[in-house]
Image (cartoon, rainbow over all chains, first blue to last red; front, side, top):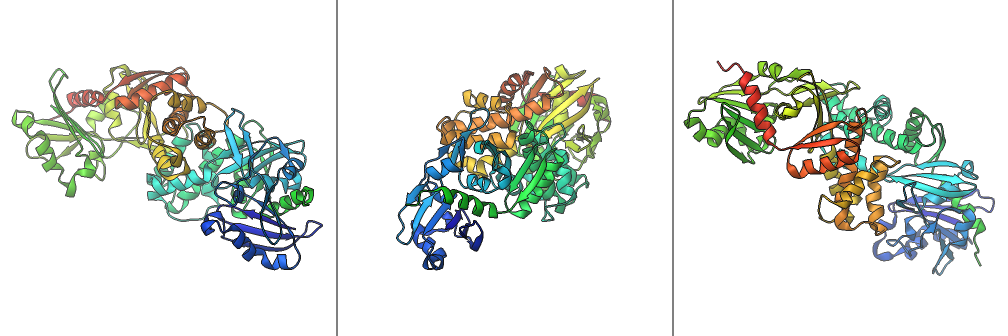
Length: 293
Length: 293
Protein backbone atom coordinates (compact mmCIF):
# COMPACT_ATOMS: atom_id res chain seq x y z
CA UNK A 1 0.00 0.00 0.00
CA UNK A 2 0.91 3.68 -0.19
CA UNK A 3 0.72 5.85 2.92
CA UNK A 4 0.87 9.64 2.71
CA UNK A 5 1.27 12.19 5.48
CA UNK A 6 -0.13 15.24 3.63
CA UNK A 7 0.12 18.34 5.76
CA UNK A 8 -0.27 22.07 5.41
CA UNK A 9 3.19 22.67 3.99
CA UNK A 10 4.70 19.23 3.41
CA UNK A 11 3.93 16.05 1.48
CA UNK A 12 5.55 12.77 2.56
CA UNK A 13 4.71 9.53 0.77
CA UNK A 14 5.74 5.98 1.68
CA UNK A 15 5.45 2.82 -0.36
CA UNK A 16 4.90 0.18 2.29
CA UNK A 17 5.41 -3.58 1.92
CA UNK A 18 2.94 -6.12 3.27
CA UNK A 19 5.24 -6.72 6.29
CA UNK A 20 5.22 -2.98 7.13
CA UNK A 21 8.70 -2.29 5.76
CA UNK A 22 9.13 1.01 3.87
CA UNK A 23 10.14 0.13 0.28
CA UNK A 24 10.34 3.66 -1.12
CA UNK A 25 9.68 7.19 -0.02
CA UNK A 26 9.13 10.67 -1.46
CA UNK A 27 9.04 13.99 0.35
CA UNK A 28 8.51 17.57 -0.78
CA UNK A 29 6.82 20.86 -0.18
CA UNK A 30 3.54 20.15 -1.97
CA UNK A 31 1.50 20.61 1.21
CA UNK A 32 -2.15 21.56 0.79
CA UNK A 33 -1.35 25.28 0.85
CA UNK A 34 0.97 24.76 -2.12
CA UNK A 35 -1.55 22.88 -4.28
CA UNK A 36 -3.34 25.46 -6.47
CA UNK A 37 -7.03 25.31 -7.41
CA UNK A 38 -7.80 22.11 -5.51
CA UNK A 39 -5.68 20.03 -7.92
CA UNK A 40 -5.15 17.28 -5.32
CA UNK A 41 -5.88 14.36 -7.66
CA UNK A 42 -3.41 15.64 -10.26
CA UNK A 43 -0.77 16.31 -7.60
CA UNK A 44 -1.20 12.85 -6.13
CA UNK A 45 -0.86 11.23 -9.54
CA UNK A 46 2.27 13.23 -10.32
CA UNK A 47 3.84 12.29 -7.01
CA UNK A 48 3.07 8.57 -6.87
CA UNK A 49 2.35 7.70 -10.51
CA UNK A 50 5.30 5.30 -10.82
CA UNK A 51 4.21 3.36 -7.72
CA UNK A 52 0.67 3.06 -9.10
CA UNK A 53 2.12 1.85 -12.38
CA UNK A 54 4.07 -0.75 -10.41
CA UNK A 55 0.80 -2.19 -9.12
CA UNK A 56 0.00 -0.37 -5.88
CA UNK A 57 -3.77 0.13 -5.65
CA UNK A 58 -4.41 1.26 -2.06
CA UNK A 59 -3.61 4.80 -0.90
CA UNK A 60 -4.18 6.05 2.64
CA UNK A 61 -3.89 9.79 3.41
CA UNK A 62 -3.52 11.43 6.81
CA UNK A 63 -3.11 15.05 7.90
CA UNK A 64 -4.61 18.37 6.84
CA UNK A 65 -5.55 16.91 3.42
CA UNK A 66 -8.70 15.80 5.29
CA UNK A 67 -9.56 19.32 6.47
CA UNK A 68 -11.95 21.85 4.96
CA UNK A 69 -8.98 23.42 3.14
CA UNK A 70 -7.90 19.99 1.82
CA UNK A 71 -9.21 17.53 -0.72
CA UNK A 72 -12.31 16.55 1.19
CA UNK A 73 -13.33 17.19 4.78
CA UNK A 74 -13.26 14.04 6.93
CA UNK A 75 -15.39 14.60 10.05
CA UNK A 76 -13.48 14.40 13.31
CA UNK A 77 -13.77 11.14 15.23
CA UNK A 78 -14.36 11.68 18.96
CA UNK A 79 -11.88 10.40 21.55
CA UNK A 80 -11.35 7.82 22.91
CA UNK A 81 -10.30 6.24 19.63
CA UNK A 82 -7.82 3.51 18.76
CA UNK A 83 -6.51 2.08 15.51
CA UNK A 84 -9.61 -0.11 14.96
CA UNK A 85 -11.98 2.83 15.54
CA UNK A 86 -10.00 4.98 13.11
CA UNK A 87 -9.83 2.22 10.47
CA UNK A 88 -13.64 1.95 10.61
CA UNK A 89 -14.04 5.74 10.15
CA UNK A 90 -11.96 6.20 6.98
CA UNK A 91 -13.50 8.42 4.31
CA UNK A 92 -13.37 7.36 0.64
CA UNK A 93 -12.14 9.71 -2.07
CA UNK A 94 -12.83 9.46 -5.80
CA UNK A 95 -9.61 8.80 -7.71
CA UNK A 96 -9.36 6.99 -11.05
CA UNK A 97 -6.11 5.09 -10.55
CA UNK A 98 -6.41 3.54 -7.07
CA UNK A 99 -8.59 3.25 -3.98
CA UNK A 100 -7.95 6.32 -1.83
CA UNK A 101 -9.05 6.74 1.77
CA UNK A 102 -8.65 9.57 4.29
CA UNK A 103 -7.78 9.13 7.97
CA UNK A 104 -10.17 11.28 10.04
CA UNK A 105 -8.75 13.67 12.61
CA UNK A 106 -9.69 13.30 16.26
CA UNK A 107 -11.69 15.63 18.48
CA UNK A 108 -11.59 15.78 22.25
CA UNK A 109 -11.51 18.15 25.17
CA UNK A 110 -8.84 19.01 27.68
CA UNK A 111 -9.37 18.35 31.39
CA UNK A 112 -11.28 21.64 31.69
CA UNK A 113 -13.65 20.84 28.83
CA UNK A 114 -12.06 23.13 26.23
CA UNK A 115 -12.40 21.70 22.72
CA UNK A 116 -9.35 20.19 20.99
CA UNK A 117 -8.83 18.80 17.49
CA UNK A 118 -5.95 17.25 15.56
CA UNK A 119 -5.28 15.90 12.08
CA UNK A 120 -2.28 13.73 11.31
CA UNK A 121 -0.82 13.44 14.80
CA UNK A 122 -3.15 10.52 15.64
CA UNK A 123 -1.52 8.50 12.83
CA UNK A 124 1.99 9.23 14.12
CA UNK A 125 1.00 8.24 17.66
CA UNK A 126 -0.43 4.95 16.36
CA UNK A 127 2.91 4.34 14.63
CA UNK A 128 4.98 4.35 17.81
CA UNK A 129 5.19 0.80 19.22
CA UNK A 130 5.93 2.10 22.75
CA UNK A 131 2.45 3.70 22.74
CA UNK A 132 0.62 0.56 21.62
CA UNK A 133 -1.11 -0.02 24.95
CA UNK A 134 -0.61 3.29 26.72
CA UNK A 135 1.62 6.25 27.44
CA UNK A 136 2.21 9.92 26.75
CA UNK A 137 3.33 11.40 23.40
CA UNK A 138 4.57 14.86 22.52
CA UNK A 139 4.56 16.13 18.91
CA UNK A 140 6.44 19.44 18.88
CA UNK A 141 5.81 22.13 16.29
CA UNK A 142 3.98 25.35 15.51
CA UNK A 143 1.13 23.95 17.57
CA UNK A 144 2.57 21.18 19.76
CA UNK A 145 0.34 18.32 20.80
CA UNK A 146 0.58 16.25 23.96
CA UNK A 147 -1.39 13.04 23.50
CA UNK A 148 -2.46 10.49 26.11
CA UNK A 149 -2.99 6.81 25.20
CA UNK A 150 -4.78 4.40 27.55
CA UNK A 151 -5.73 0.77 26.90
CA UNK A 152 -4.74 1.13 23.25
CA UNK A 153 -6.86 4.20 22.53
CA UNK A 154 -6.10 7.92 22.37
CA UNK A 155 -8.11 9.32 25.28
CA UNK A 156 -7.21 13.00 25.24
CA UNK A 157 -4.76 15.62 24.08
CA UNK A 158 -3.80 19.27 24.50
CA UNK A 159 -2.38 21.83 22.07
CA UNK A 160 0.32 24.35 23.01
CA UNK A 161 0.99 27.34 20.75
CA UNK A 162 4.70 27.25 21.52
CA UNK A 163 6.20 27.40 18.03
CA UNK A 164 3.88 30.11 16.79
CA UNK A 165 4.27 32.17 19.98
CA UNK A 166 8.05 31.96 19.54
CA UNK A 167 7.78 33.33 16.01
CA UNK A 168 5.47 36.17 17.01
CA UNK A 169 7.58 37.17 20.03
CA UNK A 170 10.83 37.02 18.08
CA UNK A 171 9.47 38.73 14.98
CA UNK A 172 7.13 41.34 16.39
CA UNK A 173 8.21 42.42 19.87
CA UNK A 174 11.14 44.26 21.42
CA UNK A 175 12.78 40.85 22.11
CA UNK A 176 13.76 40.45 18.47
CA UNK A 177 15.75 43.69 18.50
CA UNK A 178 18.46 42.16 20.67
CA UNK A 179 18.53 38.77 18.95
CA UNK A 180 20.81 37.38 16.27
CA UNK A 181 20.95 33.86 14.83
CA UNK A 182 22.86 31.33 16.87
CA UNK A 183 22.82 27.64 17.81
CA UNK A 184 19.37 26.44 18.93
CA UNK A 185 20.71 23.74 21.18
CA UNK A 186 23.19 24.39 23.96
CA UNK A 187 23.75 26.06 27.30
CA UNK A 188 21.48 29.11 26.58
CA UNK A 189 18.59 26.79 25.70
CA UNK A 190 19.15 24.83 28.92
CA UNK A 191 19.31 28.09 30.91
CA UNK A 192 15.95 29.09 29.43
CA UNK A 193 14.44 25.76 30.44
CA UNK A 194 15.74 26.22 34.00
CA UNK A 195 14.40 29.77 34.00
CA UNK A 196 10.91 28.43 33.23
CA UNK A 197 10.92 26.82 36.70
CA UNK A 198 11.55 30.12 38.52
CA UNK A 199 8.78 32.17 40.14
CA UNK A 200 7.25 35.03 38.16
CA UNK A 201 5.54 33.27 35.27
CA UNK A 202 6.07 33.13 31.51
CA UNK A 203 5.25 36.79 30.76
CA UNK A 204 7.91 37.87 33.25
CA UNK A 205 10.47 35.29 32.15
CA UNK A 206 10.33 36.30 28.47
CA UNK A 207 10.99 39.95 29.34
CA UNK A 208 14.17 38.72 31.03
CA UNK A 209 15.53 37.74 27.60
CA UNK A 210 15.98 41.43 26.90
CA UNK A 211 17.11 42.35 30.43
CA UNK A 212 19.79 39.66 30.36
CA UNK A 213 21.12 40.85 26.99
CA UNK A 214 21.17 44.50 28.13
CA UNK A 215 22.96 43.44 31.33
CA UNK A 216 25.48 41.58 29.12
CA UNK A 217 24.75 38.27 30.80
CA UNK A 218 23.50 36.80 27.52
CA UNK A 219 24.89 37.29 23.99
CA UNK A 220 22.60 38.39 21.17
CA UNK A 221 23.36 35.10 19.41
CA UNK A 222 22.22 33.21 22.54
CA UNK A 223 18.99 35.11 23.11
CA UNK A 224 16.89 33.11 20.63
CA UNK A 225 17.84 29.77 22.18
CA UNK A 226 17.19 31.18 25.67
CA UNK A 227 13.69 32.34 24.64
CA UNK A 228 13.03 28.96 23.03
CA UNK A 229 14.13 27.23 26.26
CA UNK A 230 11.80 29.39 28.34
CA UNK A 231 8.79 28.60 26.13
CA UNK A 232 9.47 24.87 25.68
CA UNK A 233 10.27 24.64 29.39
CA UNK A 234 6.92 26.19 30.29
CA UNK A 235 5.16 23.83 27.89
CA UNK A 236 6.90 20.73 29.29
CA UNK A 237 6.35 21.73 32.93
CA UNK A 238 2.64 22.36 32.35
CA UNK A 239 2.20 19.12 30.39
CA UNK A 240 4.06 17.06 33.01
CA UNK A 241 2.48 18.77 36.04
CA UNK A 242 -0.05 16.02 36.66
CA UNK A 243 2.31 13.14 35.84
CA UNK A 244 5.80 13.99 37.11
CA UNK A 245 8.39 11.43 36.07
CA UNK A 246 6.37 10.37 33.02
CA UNK A 247 8.04 8.71 30.03
CA UNK A 248 7.29 10.85 26.98
CA UNK A 249 7.50 9.59 23.39
CA UNK A 250 8.62 12.65 21.42
CA UNK A 251 7.74 12.40 17.71
CA UNK A 252 8.95 14.76 14.98
CA UNK A 253 11.91 16.24 13.16
CA UNK A 254 15.17 15.33 14.94
CA UNK A 255 16.33 18.92 15.59
CA UNK A 256 13.04 19.60 17.39
CA UNK A 257 12.69 16.31 19.26
CA UNK A 258 16.23 16.79 20.58
CA UNK A 259 15.30 20.17 22.11
CA UNK A 260 12.11 18.76 23.61
CA UNK A 261 13.97 15.73 25.00
CA UNK A 262 16.43 18.08 26.76
CA UNK A 263 13.57 20.16 28.18
CA UNK A 264 11.52 17.15 29.28
CA UNK A 265 14.53 15.64 31.11
CA UNK A 266 15.25 18.97 32.81
CA UNK A 267 11.61 19.19 33.91
CA UNK A 268 11.58 15.76 35.55
CA UNK A 269 10.33 13.54 32.73
CA UNK A 270 11.99 10.88 30.59
CA UNK A 271 12.02 11.34 26.81
CA UNK A 272 12.35 8.85 23.95
CA UNK A 273 12.75 10.31 20.45
CA UNK A 274 11.00 9.15 17.25
CA UNK A 275 11.35 10.55 13.75
CA UNK A 276 8.83 11.05 10.97
CA UNK A 277 8.82 7.31 10.12
CA UNK A 278 6.16 7.01 12.82
CA UNK A 279 3.67 8.36 10.28
CA UNK A 280 4.54 5.55 7.84
CA UNK A 281 4.07 2.89 10.50
CA UNK A 282 0.80 4.44 11.66
CA UNK A 283 -0.53 4.55 8.09
CA UNK A 284 0.47 0.90 7.62
CA UNK A 285 -1.27 -0.15 10.84
CA UNK A 286 -4.48 1.68 9.95
CA UNK A 287 -4.33 0.51 6.32
CA UNK A 288 -3.99 -3.10 7.45
CA UNK A 289 -7.31 -2.87 9.33
CA UNK A 290 -9.19 -0.92 6.66
CA UNK A 291 -12.02 -2.38 4.53
CA UNK A 292 -10.52 -1.80 1.08
CA UNK A 293 -13.28 -3.55 -0.86
CA UNK B 1 7.23 73.83 40.67
CA UNK B 2 6.56 72.00 37.40
CA UNK B 3 6.52 68.22 37.25
CA UNK B 4 6.62 66.33 33.96
CA UNK B 5 6.06 62.66 33.26
CA UNK B 6 7.82 62.46 29.87
CA UNK B 7 7.54 59.02 28.39
CA UNK B 8 8.18 57.26 25.12
CA UNK B 9 4.94 58.34 23.48
CA UNK B 10 3.31 60.79 25.87
CA UNK B 11 4.10 64.08 27.60
CA UNK B 12 2.18 65.06 30.74
CA UNK B 13 3.03 68.27 32.58
CA UNK B 14 1.69 69.49 35.92
CA UNK B 15 2.01 72.91 37.51
CA UNK B 16 2.10 72.09 41.19
CA UNK B 17 1.40 74.49 44.06
CA UNK B 18 3.53 74.60 47.20
CA UNK B 19 0.90 72.53 49.03
CA UNK B 20 1.05 69.80 46.36
CA UNK B 21 -2.22 70.77 44.69
CA UNK B 22 -2.23 70.58 40.86
CA UNK B 23 -2.88 74.12 39.59
CA UNK B 24 -2.72 73.40 35.86
CA UNK B 25 -1.97 70.51 33.56
CA UNK B 26 -1.04 69.81 29.94
CA UNK B 27 -0.94 66.48 28.14
CA UNK B 28 -0.07 65.49 24.61
CA UNK B 29 1.71 63.06 22.36
CA UNK B 30 5.13 64.74 22.35
CA UNK B 31 6.80 61.70 23.91
CA UNK B 32 10.52 61.30 23.30
CA UNK B 33 9.94 59.27 20.12
CA UNK B 34 7.95 62.20 18.72
CA UNK B 35 10.59 64.85 19.41
CA UNK B 36 12.77 65.18 16.28
CA UNK B 37 16.53 65.81 16.31
CA UNK B 38 16.92 65.94 20.08
CA UNK B 39 14.93 69.21 20.29
CA UNK B 40 13.96 68.55 23.92
CA UNK B 41 14.76 72.04 25.21
CA UNK B 42 12.69 73.68 22.47
CA UNK B 43 9.81 71.26 23.03
CA UNK B 44 9.87 71.89 26.77
CA UNK B 45 9.82 75.63 26.26
CA UNK B 46 6.93 75.40 23.83
CA UNK B 47 4.93 73.23 26.20
CA UNK B 48 5.47 75.07 29.48
CA UNK B 49 6.55 78.57 28.34
CA UNK B 50 3.50 80.31 29.87
CA UNK B 51 4.11 78.68 33.26
CA UNK B 52 7.76 79.78 33.18
CA UNK B 53 6.64 83.27 32.27
CA UNK B 54 4.32 83.17 35.28
CA UNK B 55 7.33 82.66 37.53
CA UNK B 56 7.86 78.92 37.84
CA UNK B 57 11.60 78.22 37.95
CA UNK B 58 11.90 74.55 38.99
CA UNK B 59 11.17 71.70 36.58
CA UNK B 60 11.41 68.01 37.48
CA UNK B 61 11.25 65.38 34.74
CA UNK B 62 10.60 61.65 35.14
CA UNK B 63 10.30 58.80 32.66
CA UNK B 64 12.10 57.80 29.48
CA UNK B 65 13.32 61.38 28.96
CA UNK B 66 16.19 60.23 31.25
CA UNK B 67 17.11 57.27 29.03
CA UNK B 68 19.78 57.02 26.37
CA UNK B 69 17.14 57.88 23.74
CA UNK B 70 16.03 60.91 25.80
CA UNK B 71 17.47 64.30 26.63
CA UNK B 72 20.25 63.04 28.82
CA UNK B 73 20.91 59.61 30.32
CA UNK B 74 20.40 59.53 34.10
CA UNK B 75 22.21 56.47 35.54
CA UNK B 76 19.94 53.96 37.24
CA UNK B 77 19.80 54.12 41.03
CA UNK B 78 20.00 50.68 42.65
CA UNK B 79 17.17 49.37 44.84
CA UNK B 80 16.35 49.66 47.67
CA UNK B 81 15.57 53.33 47.12
CA UNK B 82 13.04 55.70 48.64
CA UNK B 83 12.01 59.27 47.96
CA UNK B 84 15.02 60.73 49.83
CA UNK B 85 17.49 58.51 47.95
CA UNK B 86 15.94 59.47 44.63
CA UNK B 87 15.90 63.19 45.51
CA UNK B 88 19.63 62.98 46.23
CA UNK B 89 20.32 61.29 42.86
CA UNK B 90 18.63 63.81 40.54
CA UNK B 91 20.59 64.76 37.41
CA UNK B 92 20.83 68.40 36.33
CA UNK B 93 20.06 69.49 32.77
CA UNK B 94 21.15 72.71 31.08
CA UNK B 95 18.14 74.88 30.25
CA UNK B 96 18.15 78.67 29.96
CA UNK B 97 14.77 79.48 31.43
CA UNK B 98 14.58 77.36 34.63
CA UNK B 99 16.37 74.81 36.78
CA UNK B 100 15.69 71.38 35.28
CA UNK B 101 16.38 68.07 36.98
CA UNK B 102 15.87 64.45 35.92
CA UNK B 103 14.56 61.67 38.16
CA UNK B 104 16.83 58.62 37.73
CA UNK B 105 15.27 55.26 36.94
CA UNK B 106 15.78 52.34 39.32
CA UNK B 107 17.65 49.10 38.79
CA UNK B 108 17.13 45.89 40.67
CA UNK B 109 16.87 42.16 40.28
CA UNK B 110 13.98 39.77 40.60
CA UNK B 111 14.05 37.01 43.22
CA UNK B 112 16.10 34.84 40.84
CA UNK B 113 18.74 37.52 40.24
CA UNK B 114 17.58 38.52 36.74
CA UNK B 115 18.23 42.22 36.07
CA UNK B 116 15.31 44.67 36.07
CA UNK B 117 15.11 48.39 35.30
CA UNK B 118 12.38 51.01 35.23
CA UNK B 119 12.03 54.71 34.42
CA UNK B 120 9.03 56.73 35.50
CA UNK B 121 7.14 54.05 37.44
CA UNK B 122 9.19 54.79 40.60
CA UNK B 123 7.77 58.32 40.59
CA UNK B 124 4.18 57.08 40.27
CA UNK B 125 4.70 54.60 43.11
CA UNK B 126 6.06 57.39 45.34
CA UNK B 127 2.93 59.38 44.53
CA UNK B 128 0.51 56.83 46.00
CA UNK B 129 -0.07 57.60 49.71
CA UNK B 130 -1.14 54.01 50.43
CA UNK B 131 2.41 52.91 49.49
CA UNK B 132 4.16 55.44 51.73
CA UNK B 133 5.48 52.87 54.16
CA UNK B 134 4.99 49.61 52.30
CA UNK B 135 2.88 47.54 49.97
CA UNK B 136 2.57 46.17 46.47
CA UNK B 137 1.94 48.23 43.31
CA UNK B 138 1.01 47.15 39.80
CA UNK B 139 1.51 49.49 36.81
CA UNK B 140 -0.15 47.82 33.81
CA UNK B 141 0.93 48.49 30.24
CA UNK B 142 3.01 47.26 27.34
CA UNK B 143 5.52 46.13 29.93
CA UNK B 144 3.68 45.89 33.26
CA UNK B 145 5.61 46.45 36.47
CA UNK B 146 4.89 44.95 39.87
CA UNK B 147 6.71 46.96 42.53
CA UNK B 148 7.31 46.10 46.16
CA UNK B 149 7.74 48.83 48.83
CA UNK B 150 9.09 48.06 52.29
CA UNK B 151 9.89 50.52 55.09
CA UNK B 152 9.36 53.45 52.73
CA UNK B 153 11.70 52.24 50.00
CA UNK B 154 11.20 50.39 46.72
CA UNK B 155 12.94 47.07 47.34
CA UNK B 156 12.28 45.16 44.13
CA UNK B 157 10.13 44.87 41.05
CA UNK B 158 9.35 42.60 38.11
CA UNK B 159 8.36 43.30 34.52
CA UNK B 160 5.73 41.32 32.62
CA UNK B 161 5.50 41.61 28.83
CA UNK B 162 1.73 41.24 28.91
CA UNK B 163 0.65 44.17 26.74
CA UNK B 164 3.25 43.58 24.07
CA UNK B 165 2.64 39.82 24.02
CA UNK B 166 -1.08 40.52 23.53
CA UNK B 167 -0.32 42.71 20.52
CA UNK B 168 2.02 40.17 18.94
CA UNK B 169 -0.36 37.25 19.49
CA UNK B 170 -3.37 39.16 18.19
CA UNK B 171 -1.56 40.73 15.26
CA UNK B 172 0.76 37.97 14.11
CA UNK B 173 -0.64 34.55 14.97
CA UNK B 174 -3.62 32.44 13.94
CA UNK B 175 -5.52 33.82 16.96
CA UNK B 176 -6.09 37.15 15.23
CA UNK B 177 -7.88 35.48 12.33
CA UNK B 178 -10.92 34.67 14.47
CA UNK B 179 -11.00 37.96 16.37
CA UNK B 180 -13.03 41.10 15.83
CA UNK B 181 -13.22 44.24 17.97
CA UNK B 182 -15.51 44.02 20.97
CA UNK B 183 -15.79 45.23 24.57
CA UNK B 184 -12.56 44.74 26.55
CA UNK B 185 -14.29 44.41 29.86
CA UNK B 186 -17.02 41.90 30.51
CA UNK B 187 -17.87 38.23 30.88
CA UNK B 188 -15.36 37.02 28.19
CA UNK B 189 -12.53 38.85 29.98
CA UNK B 190 -13.56 37.26 33.28
CA UNK B 191 -13.76 33.83 31.61
CA UNK B 192 -10.18 34.30 30.35
CA UNK B 193 -9.01 35.19 33.86
CA UNK B 194 -10.69 32.04 35.24
CA UNK B 195 -9.13 30.02 32.43
CA UNK B 196 -5.66 31.18 33.53
CA UNK B 197 -6.16 29.16 36.72
CA UNK B 198 -6.79 25.88 34.89
CA UNK B 199 -4.10 23.24 34.35
CA UNK B 200 -2.17 23.24 31.07
CA UNK B 201 -0.26 26.52 31.18
CA UNK B 202 -0.37 29.76 29.22
CA UNK B 203 0.73 28.34 25.85
CA UNK B 204 -2.13 25.85 25.98
CA UNK B 205 -4.71 28.33 27.26
CA UNK B 206 -4.09 30.83 24.46
CA UNK B 207 -4.62 28.15 21.80
CA UNK B 208 -8.03 27.61 23.39
CA UNK B 209 -9.05 31.09 22.21
CA UNK B 210 -9.20 29.69 18.70
CA UNK B 211 -10.65 26.31 19.72
CA UNK B 212 -13.47 28.01 21.61
CA UNK B 213 -14.33 30.26 18.66
CA UNK B 214 -14.29 27.30 16.22
CA UNK B 215 -16.48 25.32 18.64
CA UNK B 216 -18.85 28.33 18.71
CA UNK B 217 -18.52 28.71 22.46
CA UNK B 218 -17.00 32.18 22.06
CA UNK B 219 -17.94 34.93 19.59
CA UNK B 220 -15.28 36.55 17.41
CA UNK B 221 -16.05 39.86 19.13
CA UNK B 222 -15.39 38.21 22.52
CA UNK B 223 -12.13 36.50 21.60
CA UNK B 224 -9.88 39.53 22.18
CA UNK B 225 -11.21 40.11 25.68
CA UNK B 226 -10.88 36.39 26.46
CA UNK B 227 -7.21 36.41 25.33
CA UNK B 228 -6.59 39.55 27.37
CA UNK B 229 -8.15 37.87 30.42
CA UNK B 230 -5.94 34.80 30.00
CA UNK B 231 -2.75 36.89 29.80
CA UNK B 232 -3.60 39.35 32.59
CA UNK B 233 -4.83 36.42 34.71
CA UNK B 234 -1.52 34.62 34.26
CA UNK B 235 0.37 37.80 35.14
CA UNK B 236 -1.69 38.43 38.28
CA UNK B 237 -1.50 34.81 39.46
CA UNK B 238 2.28 34.72 39.05
CA UNK B 239 2.73 38.10 40.75
CA UNK B 240 0.47 37.14 43.66
CA UNK B 241 1.80 33.59 44.04
CA UNK B 242 4.08 34.40 46.97
CA UNK B 243 1.65 36.82 48.66
CA UNK B 244 -1.90 35.51 48.25
CA UNK B 245 -4.52 37.94 49.53
CA UNK B 246 -2.25 40.93 49.00
CA UNK B 247 -3.66 44.43 48.59
CA UNK B 248 -2.44 45.77 45.24
CA UNK B 249 -2.32 49.48 44.35
CA UNK B 250 -3.01 49.53 40.60
CA UNK B 251 -1.75 52.71 38.92
CA UNK B 252 -2.49 53.78 35.35
CA UNK B 253 -5.13 54.67 32.80
CA UNK B 254 -8.62 53.88 34.16
CA UNK B 255 -9.61 51.46 31.37
CA UNK B 256 -6.53 49.37 32.13
CA UNK B 257 -6.58 49.58 35.94
CA UNK B 258 -10.21 48.43 35.83
CA UNK B 259 -9.26 45.26 33.95
CA UNK B 260 -6.36 44.58 36.29
CA UNK B 261 -8.53 45.18 39.35
CA UNK B 262 -11.02 42.58 38.07
CA UNK B 263 -8.24 40.09 37.42
CA UNK B 264 -6.52 40.68 40.75
CA UNK B 265 -9.79 40.17 42.64
CA UNK B 266 -10.50 36.97 40.72
CA UNK B 267 -7.00 35.70 41.53
CA UNK B 268 -7.38 36.20 45.29
CA UNK B 269 -5.95 39.70 45.75
CA UNK B 270 -7.53 43.03 46.63
CA UNK B 271 -7.08 45.95 44.22
CA UNK B 272 -7.24 49.72 44.72
CA UNK B 273 -7.14 51.88 41.57
CA UNK B 274 -5.12 55.07 41.03
CA UNK B 275 -4.98 57.26 37.94
CA UNK B 276 -2.14 59.16 36.30
CA UNK B 277 -2.25 61.91 38.97
CA UNK B 278 0.06 59.64 40.98
CA UNK B 279 2.90 60.87 38.76
CA UNK B 280 2.17 64.50 39.71
CA UNK B 281 2.14 63.70 43.42
CA UNK B 282 5.37 61.68 43.10
CA UNK B 283 7.08 64.53 41.25
CA UNK B 284 5.93 66.95 43.94
CA UNK B 285 7.23 64.74 46.75
CA UNK B 286 10.63 64.26 45.08
CA UNK B 287 10.82 67.95 44.10
CA UNK B 288 10.14 69.00 47.69
CA UNK B 289 13.23 67.10 48.87
CA UNK B 290 15.52 68.15 46.02
CA UNK B 291 18.47 70.54 46.41
CA UNK B 292 17.43 73.22 43.90
CA UNK B 293 20.28 75.62 44.63
